Image (tube, rainbow, N blue to C red; front, side):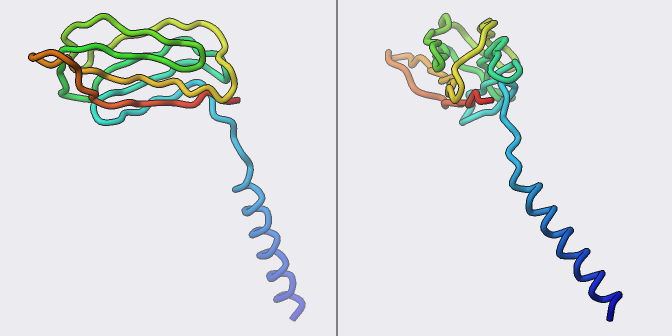
Length: 128
């Protein structure tokens, strides 16, 4: 009986420790990447410090167009050209962005008859 109680207490303690550890929040940092449709973003940095933001396309993608990069005080358009994977545009940032800034890259394909078509918007949140 004593052995069962010891085992039961150990099991309850292990569950409590596991539950407590699973609720710990690990801060996200500036280093992240992701894609939406065929547009990809890579944010290089650590904590709130952003070294660069890269706009690119997914594997085997090719367009004639440009990228719009914005968020955290950044707002710029790349030049218009033919982009093909693994080509991309790297914006050098080199400073901290405000906590909780959302930085996005949106790809725009230029149409033959004029106008543009969105090819995806990928975003990342900068937080400490």
